[in-house]
Amino acid sequence: MSWLASADHTVNTHRRTLTVLDAFDAEVSCTIPLPHPSIRCQVVTAKSFRATCAYEQPGEIGLCFLQSVAVADSSPTDLSSDPRVVRLLDEFADIFESPTGVVPDRPISHEIILEVGAVSPKGCIYRMSEEELTVLRAQLNDLLDKGWIRPSSSPYGAPVFFVRKTNKDLRSCIDYRKLNAQTVKNEGPLPRIDDLLERLGGAKYFFKLDLKSGYHQISIPPNDRYKSAFKMQYGNFEWVVMPFGLTNTPATFHAAMTNEFHAMLDRFVLVNLDDILVYSRSLEDHLEHLRRVLETLRRTKYKANHDKCEFVWQELEYLGHFVTPEGISLLSDKIQAIQEWSEPRNVTDARSFLGLAGYYQRFIKGYSKIVAHLTKLQCEDWPFDFGEDARESFWFSKPRYYLRRSCAYTTRYCQRASLRMRPAMALVPSSNNTMAWTGTRSST
Image (tube, rainbow, N blue to C red; front, side, top):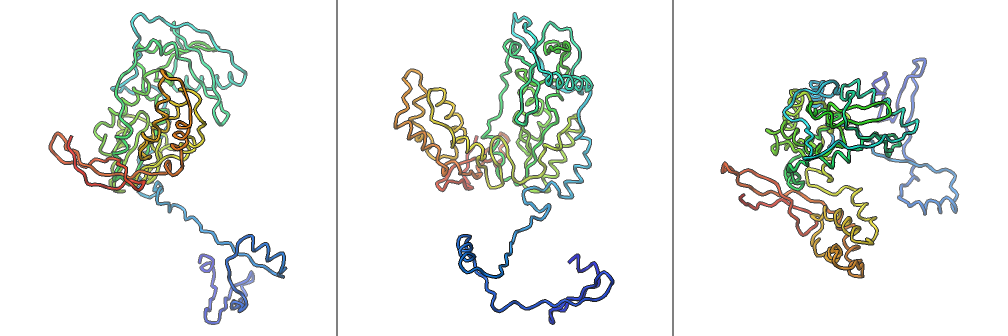
C-alpha cells in the first residue's frame, strides 16, 4: 500500500490491469494474467517431491514459501513498549543511572559481628597471571573512583583471586572464608517460596526489578569496615559498601528491601533476597504499582538496572519457575537437568537428586510413593544398595509426562485478624495434571 501511495498508479481490477509510471513519468500498462487452467495445487511431502523431480523431469517448477511475519511490539507477553509504560520510565529516568559515591544514610546497613575471642585471620597473597593483574588494576581503579573502597591499614586482609565466567571473562573474588567462620550468623527468617508463588494467583502483569550493583548500594558501618579488608599486590583496601562473599549479606539485602517496600508487601510486591517482583491484576493497576515502586526507589536513592529489569510482562521466570497468568511451570533447563541425571552411586548422589527433584514435587502426583525406595537410600546406617527397586524408583521419577506439568493457581480465603475476608492463593493439584480454580474456604 505504501508503494501505491507513492505515485499516481492506476489499478483496474475489472480489466485486471495496473498502470505505473516509469523513470521518465511515462505510463506503462501491465496486465495481470488469469490463473492458468492447468495449474493445480497439491500438498506433497519432501520425499514425493524428490521422486516427482527424478522421474517426471518437469520443465519448470515454481516454489512458493509462506511465512508469518512477526509484527513489532505486538507480543501479548511483553508490554514494555506500550506508550504509557515508556512515558512512565522516561519520567523516572534518574532511577536507572549508575550508582556512584557515598551510599546515602539508610535504616539498614551491613554489620560484621564477630564471635567472642575471634582474632584477625592470617593469609598470603595469591599469585596472578599478567592477564589477571591487568583486570585487577582496572577493577581496583574503578572501585576507588566510585568511592566504594578505600586504602586500609587493617590487620585483616582476605586474599583476592579470579574465576573464569562462562563467557571466558574474569571475575574477581575475595576469599572471606576465614572471616566468615568467625562471624555470628544472621538467623533472620526468609519467606517460603511456595507462599510467594501462591500470592501471584489472579495476577496478569509482572515487573521484575533488578538493582544495579545492588549489594554495593548498602553501606557498612564505619566501625566494621576494617574487618572487610582485602589484600593484593597493589596494597590493602577495605570496603565502604557491602561486598559479595561475606556471610549474612543476602539476609542484609533482603532486610533492606523488605524495609523499603514494607507497605507494599503481599499487596503487589514480593521480596525474596535480591528477587523483587511487582504483580497486578490489570494493566491500569500495574502502572500505578510501578509508579509507587519507582517513587520509593527515587526517595530512598536506590538505582535500578534498566537492562536487567523486565517491565510489564505477562510471562517471566521467577524463583526457578515460569510464571504466567494461568499458573506456573518448570523451567526447561531444570527439566533437562533432572532428565540427564545419572544413577546415584552413593548416599550423597541420592540426596542431591532428591533435593532437586523434590523441589518440584508439587508437579508430580504421588511423588512420595514414587521415590520411596530412593528415600531409603539416604539412611547412612544401612549399606547403600541401588537395587532394582531403587533403580525403578529413580527412572520412574524422571518421565517427561510428569515433569512437563504446569500448576494453575487456586483460590482460598483466609480470615485476617481484622475479620475481613481477603482472597489468597494456593496451589492444589488436580487429577488432570493441572490445577484449577476452587472455592474452598479456610480460616487462619
